[in-house]
Length: 322
Image (cartoon, rainbow, N blue to C red; front, side):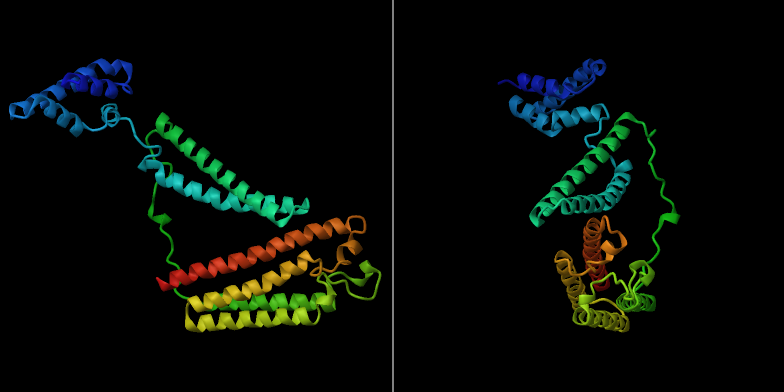
């Protein structure tokens, strides 16, 4: 194999991706450049073959060299649109994935699917949706950048108005107050539901109140729930006094959240959390169907609130340690 053959092969490889109208001029320019550099090395006493190999090695990948000649980008999305692409993709994933997961899980549960089938369907859907979102979002930005439809400008122009507000340091009094008010309202609603009821006697045609929760939960299940709510209130006060979330507090919060959510989900699955007479009384024709739908939705609410609470406190704990 001669040095001339190496040069011709390199030039041919570099010209493969060059537009036809530029190819002849660039081929001659590249060949002349290689020959000049080889001659310079040979003039310094380097053997012809070694000089040829050294020059071609320094020039590097012929495709990359050709991209430089034609000012062609070797990336999908350049720095001008990268942040816009990343922000949009994160926003779409944050919105679409939870909605897709809840929708698929709800449909599977209502159709009578088992736990394993529900989990498998949700995972498969999330993977498919995430891949499609990433692909189509990226494709749109690639087309915009490659075709010049953006006129060389960024989609969003940064201004000082976009600077984020500094986050509150520690746990404020408002956080503690909001937690205590929420727990008080929840406890009051439970007591009202079991004693007075949210449906008047005229609707039920009886003198007894029609509670939404199963009356059989009183007293032990309800008492246990009130104990957990009292511990939640105490935790909120302690965290406020300390001024921040710590890992032990986060663990206690997670335990309390799961202690409420898991029994509620088990009772829902057994049909013992909601009053079995509630919807059949209000909707005699479709009571069983409505009860099943509301049970599934309620289960998602319990699971979602517990998960959100655990994740939110974990994030606050990590930020506090920083």
